[in-house]
Image (cartoon, rainbow, N blue to C red):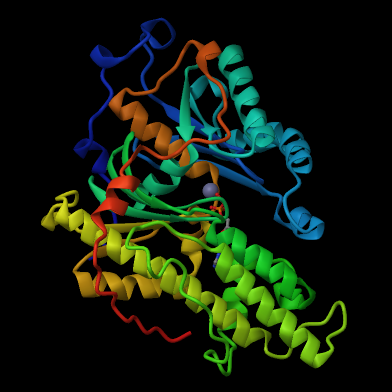
Length: 413
Ligand code: KG4
Ligand code: ZN
């Protein structure tokens, strides 16, 4: 059952006390006031300020989506230039919205891994600049951990829980055992679902439809799919059907969709900037196929967790996070799976599913409460483009060859 988090929840968690403060030199005699979070791992410049009780006092998101839509994808140099241009105004705007100054901030949480190196570097440099200028510690944040944990800001989801992270850069299944303890069960061997949605939408030219022109690929495909009149017209393969593990693969599926698109373009002799007449049906087939793949791997992960006592019976919880979690069809399908398997399912509100500063500030706060990763020696901090999530159990899952009897989940578009 989904319950809204009790406002007094901070009393339930480990709180920071003077006796457990690490490097005392910087924070002596300072009570916690609030935390600043900075996100620049990809194409969004995000900033948020969060209070000790988890209340968001100010937040700003400078999205580069429209620019990248025009460019046909993210160009790292362009993303870096935009982060450089917007980082200072974004932080300033957030401080103004919260009506506080840097002296009121107790620590700066910033995404340092994984992500586009040029983008990460801007967030790190600016966080270090602020940390030096105002004598604040930095809390380094792992982008995927932040995605997985932000749900705890809104819902009472306690550890351990199973998490499915689906975004433009990642696709993985993991058990979150604690704020800094994750067990990786499976991940994508090629692309991420959001990336595949974006590429397919671009190739379908959905952007030429005014209604979709400002939407990211995933959102446009979801909208077009809802208008399908014959959603079963196109047959697409189920990726990794023979592999009894929790890994994902989307490239074969993408190729099949693009092949069907190409065939229809030829049949209809479609002009360069026009869409095929069956575009809604092809979007529906794409969405259903990606959803089916996600459901099957999640079902197997649930079974693996149960066989290995990773999730106790009393805590059967699945958290879906990342930009693709905004997709209602996918979430509904996962909800039906969870209903069948007696799992509770949670996802953050849509604006916290996609990249944002709040999830970084929240992750910083959870670390602050536990007194972990509060760094005052700034030289030790650096960015990391690649950074797997937690301890890998992927080989163990492969070896286990869980013979899942896959459930048939039917959801209306
Ligand atoms: O989490 P996010 O903001 O960035 C990464 O960390 O990658 O996710 C962005 C991705 C994009 O690929 C976008 O197409 C996808 O999330 N997305 C969606 C929807 N809204 C955003 N995918 C499917 N359905 C949606 N409604
Ligand atoms: Zn993300």
